[in-house]
Length: 66
Image (tube, rainbow, N blue to C red; front, side, top):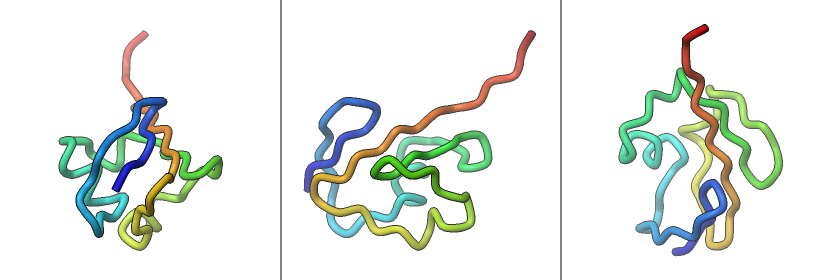
C-alpha cells in the first residue's frame, strides 16, 4: 500500500493504523500534530484510523527551544 507522508511516497504493510505508523517511526504521538487527508486529527483517534491506499499525511513534530 502506498501513502504520501510529508510529501514523499512510502510503501506500508496493510493494515497499518496511524498509531502503528508513528510507533514504527519512533515518534511519540504526544509530540506531533497529524494532518490526515487534509484534516487535523485529535490524538485520541490515532489508533482508530487505518491507513488506506493513496492517503496523504503531514506529520509535524513539535520541538522545544527558544
